[in-house]
Image 1 (spheres, rainbow, N blue to C red):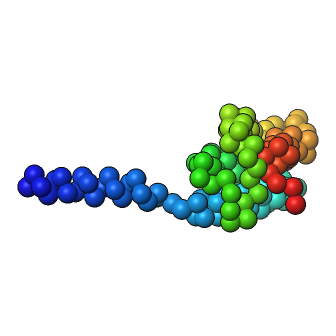
Image 2 (image 1 turned 90 degrees about the vertical axis):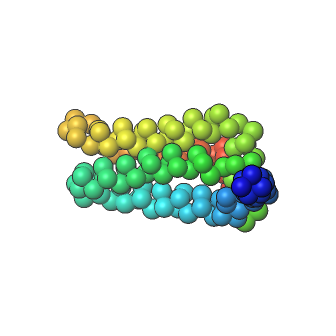
Image 3 (image 1 turned 90 degrees about the horizontal axis):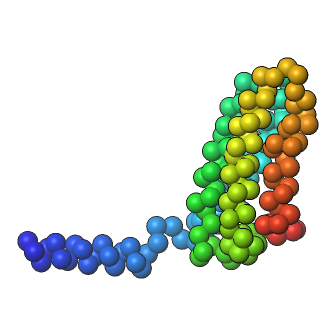
Amino acid sequence: MKKFIQLTCILLISLTTTSPLFSSEEIIKGRQEIFSKNYNTAKAVSAAIKSGDNEKAKELLEEVSKNFNTLLKYFPEDSKTGFDTEALPAIWENSDEFVTLMQNASSNALMLAKKLDDDTADITSLEKELLWNNCSACHKKFRLKK
């Protein structure tokens, strides 16, 4: 029994040290997919707001917020290059700033959702400020220009 436990431990250690759970390609493609989904969802938020469907906009903004939080897990050190990534090295060089921008984008999406109930709020301005400006701020510093 002791040999079985030792063999199992050795096998588990070797698997966890030689094989990451996800490859760099899976990580990069995963984050690209989430960013693309967030962009499309943000466009759907704009459409919902314009049509007056605030409940739909709120649902979508919650999704955007969750996606920004999820994305924080998609930037390990071994995913800096390859597979058509548009992520700049500045993400890893200024990781605190990047994380703060992503967290702010998440919080701002939820804040915009709350503001949709305020009849006195200028929703068009808030949408730009709380949703789209976050994307621009991050893209300017952390995304490869096409």
